[in-house]
Amino acid sequence: MERMGKIINRLATLNRNDSNQRLKEYNLTGNEGAILMILKKNSEIYQEDIIKELQVDKSAVTRLLQNMVSKNLVKRIQSPDDKRYYLIAITKQGLEKQKLVDNVFSKKDRDIVAGLSKNEQIELRRMLDIIKYNLEGGKISE
Image (cartoon, rainbow, N blue to C red; front, side, top):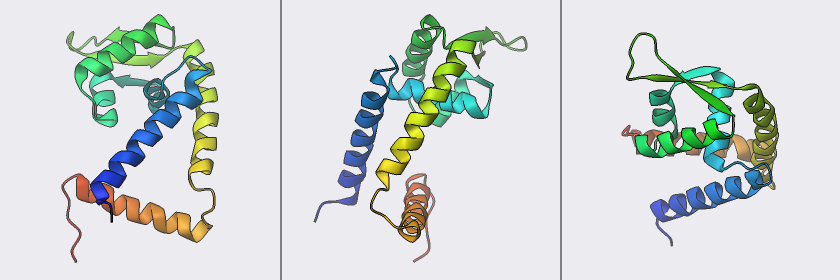
């Protein structure tokens, strides 16, 4: 039987590749789509908060945001309070792409659970939440 960590790692890779493939026709990567979805919840957010949410290193997010600025999807605004920090804000073009990404990710979510009943989907979500909690350093009592 395969180890859980290996299965989870493989699923993460498949998920990342699938997102990249689905968004390719819109000239976006999966991570760019993820940032647009983060900006759906917060129209402006500090770059450091994006780093925490995506759980990738600062230099990767900086490059990603530079790409998105060059595509006119977001703009970087220097914090008036602290010049070391930047707010990331979505542009009009970014909002248009955000709607496309939202539709793509909604379809993807449906595709991921295809063949599972509603109850199975609820149970899967419950188990995934436990795994996430455990990986974040929590511990479920046995």
